[in-house]
Image (cartoon, rainbow, N blue to C red; front, side, top):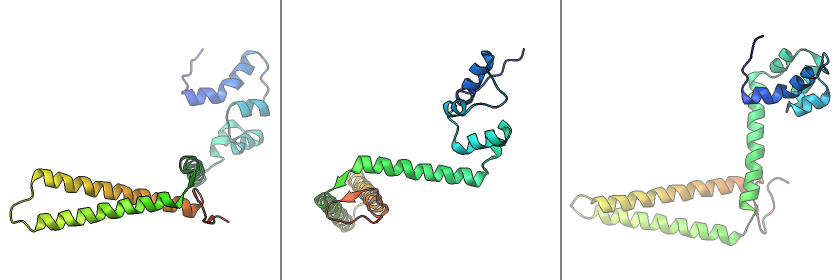
Length: 165
């Protein structure tokens, strides 16, 4: 008797079929409830009904599989953005823009100030500039993320019509 080692994902998919086989209730093809319990997609279940289990793996080509991954990523990102952002008040965006503008102004004034001296910039001043630049970059990236979420319909702004109508 050979013992096969299965990954956890593989075991979860075949467990209902194995239980049925051990009880002597296994049929030549698994039932719809067995397939649903195994966590198979509709496409995989269709392939199993129409052919052998090996056909289920061949049901999707690489491009189709990647398209499914992209669609799932969009769906999950959309639900998380909606949950995380909720309804945005215009004042929140304005406060973020004001904060970003202040950081940019402070950074520009520091660069100008440090460039006026003839001595090399000190380690502390360099760290201050670097930290300010990194904060500006993070705020800019965050602003772009929020703008994209608004345009994609993943975030609502009070008083603004959704772009996904």
